[in-house]
Amino acid sequence: MGFFQRLQQETQPLRERLLNAPVIRACARGEVSLDTYIAFLTQAYHHVRHTVPLLMACGGRLGPEYEWLREAIAEYIEEELGHQEWILSDLAACGVDPDSVRNGQPSLSIELMVSYLYDCIQRGNPLGFFGMVQVLEGTSVSIATPLAKIIQQCLGLPDSAMRYLTSHGELDQDHIRFFEGLMDRVDGVEDQRAIIHSANVVYRLYGDMFMELPLPRTQAA
Image (tube, rainbow, N blue to C red; front, side, top):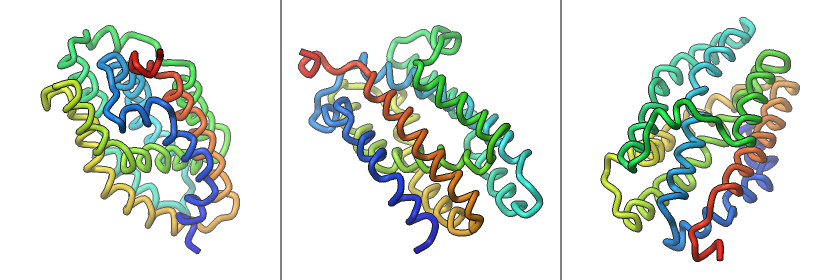
């Protein structure tokens, strides 16, 4: 078994918890509100804006034995630049002032998730960063594209309000295959353990964010 498959197996319980969050199940049934979508985009902004800085921090902490991984990080950085601005553009198309989000505060779960990742890179094992990649790209592949279509249809939103979800669902299909190849080249026991642990922490905290999103009124009632 390659390490990627082991990573999938050892994170399955918390991945299932996230994917079974009430708000995700409601959305899959076509029960969605604009408030829910705006709340999701707001929290997405507050972690996506850290993706490139985290990638840069991780690349700077890797040893010479991981030069091949540093080169992959450079590719990730190029592809991830500016994605937080896509989210602000989507929010503007939903009638939200982008500066109110840009200057706002994340939920506690997202604040803790981002803080954990910086600490993991700087104080722990920098390869733990790839636990976040496992969570966010895997979640995008599972739910971004199908739920984007449901959200857009139910709320009657223009394409200009859906760029982040739509583009990430498409991009991350390729990213997850690329990521699988990278993970199968990580053979250090401690490095593998760090990635698995980090992925489970991020699944917990990112899942908490979904649990905190406002439910559509029918569900809340």
